[in-house]
Length: 500
Image (cartoon, rainbow, N blue to C red; front, side):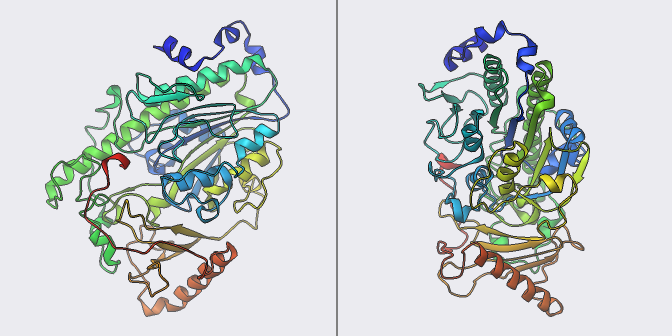
């Protein structure tokens, strides 16, 4: 099977077989970059972030040897917009990828392309997920392997560097790792040239399908709906309306529930099966990280490689009665971020609020490459080393209503270190139709008590509304320029099967 895959990729592996580990390990003045991006990964599904059930020793080892960021957020909780922000250092309203069907403009610079301009060999392997029907190579990469759409956990049809698309048998997580290792082995042909390899994992995106060895790994773990699913008093109506939809706990649960809506307490068994399967896919990702790190150590490249492990957006697993993402509630916007390598301390935990769009300036900073112009993100290198007292204390969130997934309204919100305010613009400049939400995150981290209508917190609400307006205006999003679709309300129909 591996031989067939190498032929499809047309990689010159014979050369690498004759070169020594010393050739692999030849270092350059600039570090290598191994960037591993997971899809819909909750921090709570990783051992290093406190999971009591999911054991991830290889990912945890990265955290122990580097920096674990405990307050990292996406600024739009949706795959394509967040991926574009990770690459470009920009908000979705600036880079233009507002949904999962829009291409990232070829004219927009991104951090891998900037590294390539500065002598790096660059490759992207795996789920690109910006332009659903396009598996062609994108600018800025010497080697590009991807597929159309979401890909499948088993037997995805891959396109290798612009060649003919073909099905590669096997489990996605391992196939993409094989491709990545194949490319890394070719780097021995140019010892001393730094490289940047981006790996886009499918896992743990729905529909969650563990490989056989992990299919029953969590059968003994009891999973319940979270308490917040039943604490909806004082919340906006759209959250209750979402309960029985594609994105609600009583809905189909990404086809884990065949008969829906089902509000019976015993229907939690379907929810339990879904969560167990989600966890199972994460175990394979950890195996992949172990294989990649083992290769870097065996070839003498580990010490000179910045390794980034992160997710593109968070995921709701029943919190507030929701599944999926898009909302601004904490499980939807929190992402894991672990980074180790040259220029970073070991075993450090960073609590400052870091955003997905900070990755681009940070990696370029660590690699000594020129910064991209007009970025909205900022480098966390000094923060990671404990030397950035002026780090951000507030940022804004944006999401636009999608007709293809009509279960979440337009959202504009602000999160500070201790507070969160979010409101739901109708889209035509008229007054909001939904109740806003205000949370004291220090006292109420699970966002159970909406304080927006409580007169005791009216001054706090006004302050956050003013901060949000200032942040939006600073990004050019004044009321007359912040364009968004009309909120047509929560609908019950399922999304088209082709885009699920």
